[in-house]
Length: 520
Image (cartoon, rainbow, N blue to C red; front, side, top):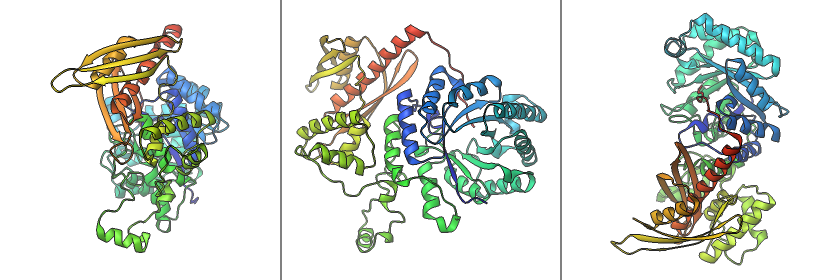
């Protein structure tokens, strides 16, 4: 049996379904490029039938032809399958992934179908997909709660119909490692020709066992793991890519398995996804959290000084986490900045590098030392509100205890028009937001305002992520600055600009209602 584990990343499909994690097409493409550099085997780029936006995002990623197999999810109906094909066919390597629920509870309450009818639908969908592509994956949704004899019957029918990969999902995170391992063993013993296909696993983390369950599955014969960066996904999330990959690498002598993942890209990819989604990584998160390689206890520090392996089972360099925290300042040149960006594991184009360097020089004038965290914050926010139509030229605020705050903003429109506005509010952020709303005409409902320090010291940059509602839809904005009011204002303006651009596109092309998202 092949000892290589294929990594199927579903950050852009299942990961995006987490509340608050919706991404723009440009953000999805940026993450797809990072996943390509990470060397994942398959990118599940989305669910093309969900909306025109999802279709266009998947198509853009496929047309970019980044290297990995590009996959789209489809329900077992011709319309979904044909949309996936139309979206992914631009990639040299592409896949159609079809699914249908099989557990008793789903059969009775969701589908209201008999066992035989579900198999017939699955077989028909797989055969149609096989007419369009050579690479077809099938998932029996809620497989971990499906009766084993019936699950084996469904998998047998899927293989006979032409599926090249059969995925076994723990859709609601219900199973436990020992039980799940027995499930895979049962299938390998009772399904004819199962060795002719790639057996896959897809676990959710409702009981905190997605990684453990995935590892149990590969011990029993699965050779593809479906996972997401930072473990994001519906409810409690999915199997964490960085955790399962490093478990296989660190304990290679136990599992006897390997992946082709470029593990030094794990940290920068994690940071990118965290920044784009606004889902901040907990400090104690395994592999990529700030504390993952930190040691405070005296006895630990003593051991580390003698030999790092006393308390570290992995090297931080192996996951792309630098220890040097090299300090740059206002006299550091473009070469030193570019070199540090590369050492941190980030790849920027010439335009992005120029923007980031200008932001770095501006920051270096504001604070004495610029740390790695500051540089990461610059990189993550390099796009900002650069697309306009409004740009923040200046901001000043006045506050007095017991009195409303006042904010004065100057915005410049892309046509060159300058607008000054003054507004008051309960605090400086509220005042600034009100002034921005008056100028842009976009009135937002603020749902959350999160602030995180990008580095150490009193002059550290504040990374602000806001969640807002407008017209019944949720939006997210982010920005970083040593002035947290300005960071919040820039994050707010980023959202306003996005809404204005979207409204303009909608008025030109009309709007189509999206279908419900799918989960497996």
